[in-house]
Image (cartoon, rainbow, N blue to C red; front, side, top):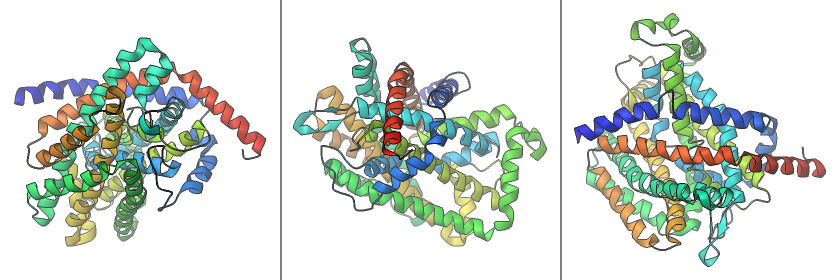
Length: 455
């Protein structure tokens, strides 16, 4: 077991390092940013208009024919905003220094263009399957957009997605929740696992309608709760906010100036860990969120592309709050890391309630990721097996949720990072090969906006 953990850990260090996925994902984001003429800036006001025109906590009930644009965004964000935004952010600034946050912002900026392209392609190549059920995602735009020669690539992507998001993802998220609740409230690990499995199963077996209904309420609540708690801590340490931002910008380009030289911190490390964490947390280019954006009921694919940008924006906001709370409370010692560092910061900021606050937020973040990733993986089960085996797959996912609560999952985390990484490669290949389709869709959309006098 230790051998496998070490082996895949070494592979991940290369895969998620500066020579493979980071340049691949960043390069795709930079390419699309210029290809689409900085769509994330030019059409940001238009994106806001489409977002808030659809935003409601009690939207029309979704069914197998799709969900509203906001419900699709909420489902995507449910998966994007996970425990990595709380624990992973702390890990990034310990490994790369406070400057890692700046490079995380850079990665997110370019990632907005990538996720726009993913959502547009998901909309264009979605299909109506059994019982008028709308399905879509990377496997569909690989096989339909690129043709039969790329069918093996689509099958490979789907198989990896089913294993990664539905099974291993359930293990690690359930484990995170159970450990946090046990530490904060002494809840038995098995009880947490069974509870998470029941709550998740209620949504899974309820279909798309129940999923959309839950995510459109859960996502604004959990994001708002975390941001309110973070805002309170920042307000109590308001005199440290400007110094914290100064530290971030200085450390991004000159780590030695803030004492990083003695710790071995460099600009390259800040870039590596900031960009890697940014790409991993916002999931732009990973091929996960297109499954949600594919089923949105919109008038034009580019409309959902614009709405999708806010998924990346939300993750950046939560990660930024996490890092700022750590910096203003002065708990960063380059020894404590991960969720322990975040809990330590909120314990300073919120006193005795800090550990419990982080545990509750972790529960919501992990739970939202479980149901979001399950929905994504189900789309791939439908792609590979044409609607068969869904009931059995739901039972398997629930079993993994219970198992994850009582299992030591170091290897599973490592394998999850590996499979997440190899999902990126076929998805990015498809994104780059289909760039003309994305460009044409945006041009058509802007032309219609101009005719309607809305540009």
